[in-house]
Image 1 (cartoon, helix red, strand yellow):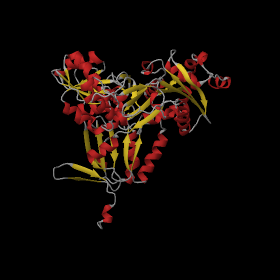
Image 2 (cartoon, rainbow, N blue to C red; image 1 turned 60 degrees about the vertical axis):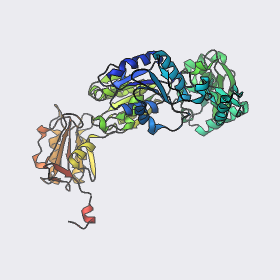
Image 3 (spheres, rainbow, N blue to C red; image 1 turned 90 degrees about the vertical axis):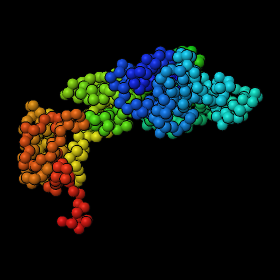
Image 4 (cartoon, helix red, strand yellow; image 1 turned 120 degrees about the vertical axis):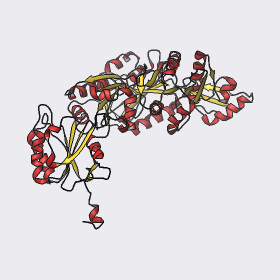
Length: 571
């Protein structure tokens, strides 16, 4: 099996019900997750197949499609960059007779195709010359990397001519040549300890010097590790394969340390972070080959696993992350590709049940963590706790996560109760943006958004803000305008605005945006009735300059001019 296939996830795509039985056979043969359109019995589902295939490819999954080669090629083509790094993409004909590796043949794709062909009694249409002639690819070693890829073509050509080509597998730096291919097995783990705020460049330079001094090839490094106290340290998180251990887990390596330190033990609870982390990564059968090396503010150590298989799934845990994703107002077509990708790669989905239901058709094996309306703090704390366990969490918000949603609360919680997880925010289309777009261009000039909910904000403060918006002549978007218990806030807000707005000022009422029951109305300020508003409605009030007019098709549009009339010399 190729260099990455032992640990690379496998995503299998069935584009319709007729291909599901074959997809299940593929899964039985090579493992993985079967994805199919919503409504079919599969492990995961997708809305648009090509987008889901592209996400899997971008995430480094091996992609197997029960479909034509053309569909897969069009899906991944925009992401093709470097054949040495791209994951396998394999097309399987719907009759199961032909298996075609399209990309990543030398990254495990050819071996995967052969395994599939054997299981399905099919033909593996492999076109790589060395594979065809010798049943192997010289640049596809088992759990290793080719150190001199520039010599691969010459060596392969020599083999095809029947000439001898020497291969060597070593963790040492060795110069190869056109008749001498050198492979570095992925058997090394680097443990790192550092002071808070250490420059990432210092750690990289320390590692480079250490490898050079010992003649060790960087290509043999499979993993990096440290204590969980350094989970948010850029000097360590710069390494994408970084894993983290508790002090208790590292203490289990105490008897194997070459240079234990009482000072370090008093400071962090373990007598040596770098050596212990390296040893914890390679397991009890591994050995320490480079004891602790000190830099100005960091230490590193290198351990070697007994076999590459020991590092296919390293011990420890990755740094957890909460990705706050804004799914927009509910219409999948308005969700950004980045949000869709974050949903795809997360292992956990956390959110209000209604929001999770809106993206359920995109779930591909993630665990749902549902919360009722009103449990905002609980759902944020739960997402943070999952991330503290090393999990990748998508905290699902409607609209934009930073607009009256969960992003601010997550940051507030980790500000008050510091933790070392990663947090990312991925914007979405907010209700005020879509309401303005549906109406025309009401936010064409200065605007503001004000929540009328006084559950968390004192009403006196809300009054100050509405008054400032009224006198400042802003277009105002009112969130949370009315509920069963709060019925008069929107009335009071209009009372504040009334002295500053003309009767004909356009008002937009937009409900259930992006959903089948969407309703958008444009009316005059003096026609507004609070009874027409509920919690699923956003209310937008124009400025003194906003206008509404009826077009030839009978549709009313509202907009706020920016001032171009003066520039054009018009009244």
